[in-house]
Amino acid sequence: MRDSVIPCFVLALATLGLTAPATAEDVADYPSRPIRVIIANPPGAGSDVGGRLVSEVAEKHLGRPLVIENKAGAGGRIGAAFVARAAPDGYTILYTPKPPITIVQHLKKLKLDYNPERDLQPLSIMTWAPAFLIVRKSFPAKTVPEFIAHAKKNPGKISFGIQGIGSEFHVTLEMLREHAGVKINAIPYTGGSQAIVDLVAERLDAMFLVPAAITQHLAEGRLRAIATLESKRVPAYPDVPTMTEVGLPQVTGSPWFGFTAPAAVPKPIIDKLAAAFAKTQQDAALVKKLNSVGYELRVLGPAESAAVFAKERAEYGKIAAGGRLDKAN
Image 1 (cartoon, rainbow, N blue to C red):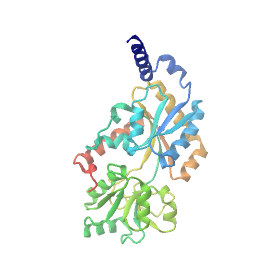
Image 2 (tube, one colour):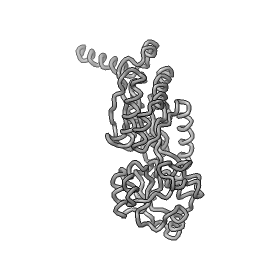
Image 3 (cartoon, rainbow, N blue to C red):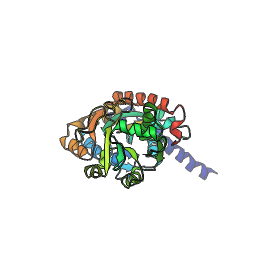
Image 4 (cartoon, one colour):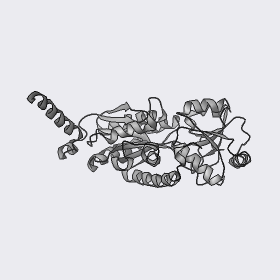
């Protein structure tokens, strides 16, 4: 009996050590060892590429390595939940797109094992990607007004790809449906790759996509961009109007990617991390690399990021209120 109690006691102490808050000494010496960056997407995905590039530069300003670890799955929720449960010492942080942070909490069918608002705090939104309304090559509409007119004449017949129920572009499609007054058939995919294949093969009519994934298809005319979700025209695509220009200012927004940390990480540690991320904007080579893969480096600090989180949570909460994000159609 005595022998069996001792290991349990030791295990309990070890477990407490894993979740113990940072001490004053820990904060003063931070960082004293490598920092784990959990990326909530698989290797090679857009957010993975961006996360690795900005981490490589940020570690120069922190003086310690930022070690990348991919924990993909469940639309980013696996990685987010892992970091939410991590020790609040600043040595495990999350690099993520917006859905696990500002969207998934509103999906009624999901049983989350973390609370994004309670369990994670913002560090820095880092990279932004312009998004476009893309149609297949022979789709009859060449402008957004023509797209809307076609949708109204053919209710429920336009097939529109979305990258998962409750994904960011599923939300955007719901905004388009609501503000344009159209019925569009949403087709859920587990990822963008197969959807792009179907779009190029003309088995799918339209999608919201970032240009980095389809640059060659756009250049060679296999796909057409008829509007951007950006608030202003994208320099690389100057002939593509904004949604505001075509009368749909509500259907705007940019996919963003950024860092969060466990909620109880002390503010001095958050400030040290945020300062290092802010300094990445001074690296011209990083800016050029990100631009080459379709991203813009625009760093927001903890307070600015928190404001974005709050605004998006409120907006997505309204959209989700009727249960539309829990199903495709």
